[in-house]
Length: 277
Image (cartoon, rainbow, N blue to C red; front, side, top):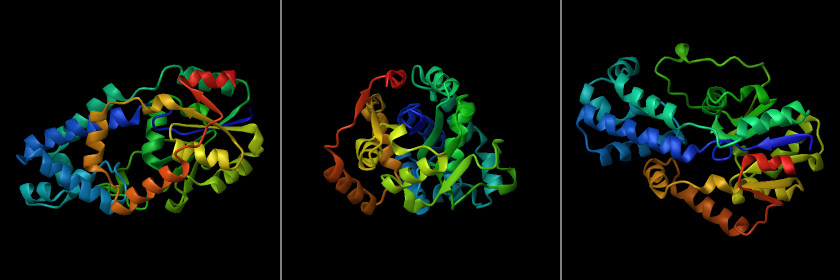
């Protein structure tokens, strides 16, 4: 193996658990702060997320009709200051729950020390994905991060957006049309990294999105099936606030029909099992 292409969410860390729990405590804090029922809050989040096409919009709270009505103001910097404790609830829970799966860092270091190129490939937006691998102290192991570009920044003050220093070409921004599964994109990644497809491994938690495209181009496909081990309650929260439209749900159903029976080359129960390959 000369190149490891790895998914991030629910492959290197449990995104479903950390994000759903962090979001829930934030929504509860907001509900108490502005005295609006939680169900109403979650419904409004869903509308905002669908408008911007993503469930991870950190400042979606500032777009909620209930928030604007309560404060009788739409100025985002003012609202952000007023809701400091609400955003703080999310941050505190994230600090508690955002953790690498066992042996991830150790495995990445071994691979890197042995000359294996490591790149991340994710459908998370550029800042969110970069923030997490930096916060989890694994940024140093990656050569590049292939991530979807964010065309709808809703930061209250764009001039104050936090910057994480990386080399100029570290982030490879992908247009939204290049979302998974995209076999041609894997060919592009291998070409850009100067590695033949047969010398690369793709690891991810989704059979329909990760494994299917790797198999289609003849790349070794490794299914991180431990990434499916999360509480149904966490998934329920995400469904309540999802950015998915009916069209997105239909597309997902079609993917499951087309690739639901795809067979990975290897199944791992711990990220370190990659070393045995």
